[in-house]
Amino acid sequence: MNSFSLKEKMKFSLLLLLLSVNFVAFNQSTEKCASHKAILYQETLTPGYKELVNTEFEIAKSALRPKANDLYTIPVVVHIVYNTANQNIADSVILNQITVLNNDYQRMNEDTVNMRADFDIVKGDPNIQFVLAQIDPAGNTTTGITRTATSSATFGSINFLLGDFSDLEKVKSTADGGSDPWDQSRYLNIWVCNMEVFNTPALLGYATPPTGLPNWPPGSNLGLSDGVVIQYQAFGANNPNTLDLGQGALTVKGRTLSHEVGHYLGLRHIWGDGNCAEEDGIDDTPNADAQSNQDCDATKNSCVDNIYGVDLPDMIENFMDYSDETCQNSFTQGQVDLMRGVLENQRIDLIQNNPASLEEMQFEASIYPNPTSSELKVKVKTGDVDELLLLDATGKHVNSHPIKNATTLISLIDLEGGIYFIHFLKNGKRQSVQKVMKL
Ligand SMILES: [Ca+2]
Ligand SMILES: [Ca+2]
Ligand SMILES: [Ca+2]
Image 1: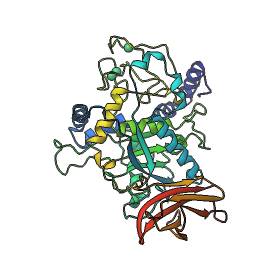
Image 2 (image 1 turned 90 degrees about the vertical axis):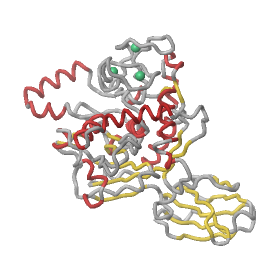
Image 3 (image 1 turned 30 degrees about the vertical axis):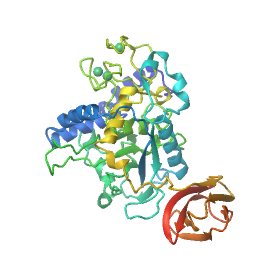
Image 4 (image 1 turned 90 degrees about the horizontal axis):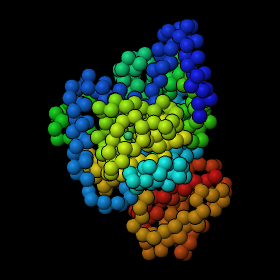
């Protein structure tokens, strides 16, 4: 929650205006999400990009599958690119962020009860699950997390403030001090880094909407590398770093990523990046004449709309608004249909026959308790698996356990805390991999 009242903020801004016009100009340029700016940037690189995005909306909407509501699983790789120890955020923050994302995308977030009843007629459950990748592009076991030390103090720059993303994009390139993406058709790549300009975050995040449609000229360079980038203090709900855009600490609940993944799966800002004449292309989201101002103002009904016969108020509860993270808690069914349509079409490689994620075992097995500080019990039918291997987070072999009984005990007592993997083998061939956590 912003600790300044609006009146105080205005006073504060006026004071800054007197002190330095330039500073105010840069201060005001902090963007909660720069995805619309990214579309404009791509339009300058490749004229026609905006139209492409619009076309994708139409294709995604028309290609919807009627209500087969299977749980879709997206493998994720998180690239931590850090210049200071604070930026090298802990595994526990990353795991927390993935949990937030899963709750928000399966409507399991506890604060759905705060959604006003007005929106009961439009609320939706995406039923999408995100897992840290278990297998990397080379076929090796992975935590789904990469860590890269960089000499770049920040990827933010004056160029970005002027609308040029090329400095930010360096985070996606090992040669430029960042971390190369993993196969972008099979992994959702998320980069977490510093994007400050003059010690204030220039933006909290940005994402690329889906690409690769038949009407796109072959070989065209879209300019932006596919995935999501998040400012490091805005990642996870248990992040020890303070997020301050120049006007006091903001509450961080991990919703910046929920918002950016919405863009990645084809959603636009709920107010359509414009006044009441511009909307987001989704029929059941109420239009608004502008974005929320990082607050929870529930009094507004800025555009007249007709959604199932109702003129709904502005939906500050929507993840695709710029409202405060504490009041974001919902998607609409129209948004859900679009995201699932994108997953069934433009981004189908994420969910179909994807070897990046082996969490679905072809045999019955259970591991408990997980996480644990002491001992794991692994239950499996002896005919399905004949050996278990324990590997550490770097893929190093820790020990082996031939399967003799239905339950195999694996002691973690002497191991350091962190992520480990259990490989299930039969005749020396890997059948599955499961991630476990030593507390
Ligand atoms: Ca609008
Ligand atoms: Ca709408
Ligand atoms: Ca309205």
